[in-house]
Image (cartoon, rainbow, N blue to C red; front, side):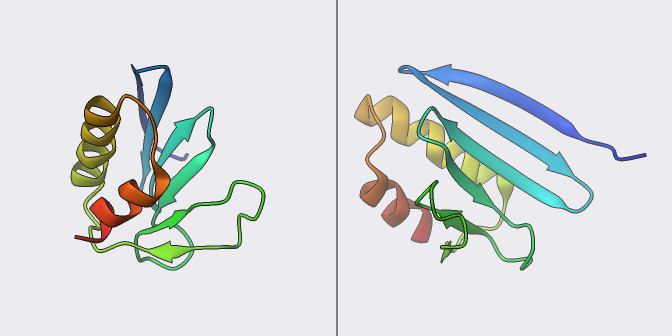
Length: 92
């Protein structure tokens, strides 16, 4: 049986989902469909283009709680998703 923890929150018109399983974690920003996860390569990365899921850009933070906080803070402070700025924030 797969154990999964999942939560979501609405921030400035964006729904942010967080899911954790024994195999890894994922954070999704909707409706933009931006995925941040550590599945497949065991290193945290962002999929910046929802139409080309194979594109992955590494991020420096691997703690799902810290990534989640960074995403939420970004949305609260900017009132919208600025993907370039978010990627910079996740690489710090």
